[in-house]
Length: 285
Image (cartoon, rainbow, N blue to C red; front, side, top):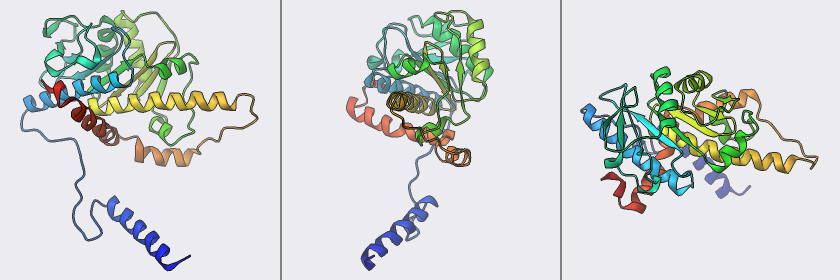
């Protein structure tokens, strides 16, 4: 190997190690994005609402809308047993901060003048009750998510991205029609357990997170992972090729690199920046 090539390889390795420690090779601190700190709960409320509205816009861009189906919720920091949702009949692409509806634990509208999706309340209220650590939940009828849900099975750990859900997702293996009963919501919450995602049989996907950013990113990633799984299964069917599964030790180690709440929050920030630029911040009003 040429000396120049060896030098580049060593420099790349050194820079990677320096980057992992949060500093440049010269010792200068790197600017690492992280969840902001707030001076008041009012400030955090606004932040959560802004990122909730952004998540709806991002979902719209990816075709996760389907009439009045689908919903994203975020817990209110001032009133922890209340959460913000989208108005029933407003398209995801049009949702702004001022459109968001605040409901209490009984589903009564506290702020806003439009109804919410009754299924959203039945599912999300029970998840928020069961999981105090969960501040946001996303559910939509994405094409690949609902296609994969038909099989009623967990994901195979066959790609690096699938490892975000390693031992951290569940399958709700029954379809009880449109979820209008809170008891159904309780069963879904119980099945979810302490995981970050659940595949709802013949229905679609649901993800949760400590932040709306993380919950939204997990949903984006889960839908793409379902897409990849469908492609792999289709290609393997009758071809004679066997799928290569990622070993347990590597999967467990990699989960810590790609599946933590902080990585979920960080993963959504490029999407937030992108929708902010594309809309000139129109969702912030």
